[in-house]
Length: 408
Image (cartoon, rainbow, N blue to C red):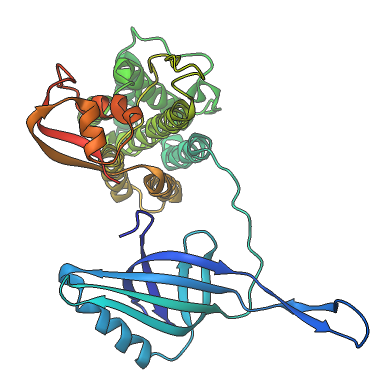
């Protein structure tokens, strides 16, 4: 199967559930209808552009092993739904049209089938360019909005009546909460130029509480920042630390839980930005020639940060989305929480398309790392990345046992 396959849902009309397909986009055709007028005694032709022909997409669907028989279901599905379909194109988004042709290639002995579909778009529209976005910048915008939303939820504090016994008890609880926040990790100084420092919380009681909460959560992030070169360890430690703060917050635990989720989203966005930079640097390093024209080795030893693997990306996303879900349970009307989850999910999904998948192989008898690369179709330049995946390897000249490598 090709490496650039993806899961696609082919929907018929207003159907609630489409047919899931493992597909690969083969080609997109954008052709013009050119009328040719040829005249006796004159060379060449007079051309007239009559407009653009229909946008045609050629798709290949894969049915392997236990999914082999499902290819018959696709054929029956297309026969029974001779209506407009919707296709989520990986580059051009949602397009509507109809299936013009179906070509089946199958191998009964290997239990594999490939179906080529010709999808014709209904009245081609304008392809909107996708603006380059930065995951950390988008997250910072949502973080600020989230802080504003949470401050609004704390606005009831301004209505506490100190003249009543109930009001005085409530103020004592608020004072205790603020002192807890201000006293926690107070040996760690909050940076003057951080996003938390630049937010205007206001001078009223809700703003005072929110400021104390935001600065306290930031100090937890600074405390565990020594593990920032290992995002999984950093985020796991941060989760445990912030959970302690939540448990100590008493009746304000729900508010603390919401903001700690916001903080974790922000920290993960920073980690993802660093990861993207590392991936681009690694790609540039691979393109650098290792030998000059005289055959001398000139490439400097790689000292670059290693990008995250697909498994690490998915693990981090699952961890933070779990915290977001806990926060949403406390504040279902806060759209900024859902936006944060979407930003992280979209970024990880996009990153995974360009990130090779890691598989585990068994090496027996022992062999040098470069020979492992050669055996599994990798370049010797991949050796350093393979070493980074296998942190327990003592001697790369004697690789043995289970070894992680990049698939494809």
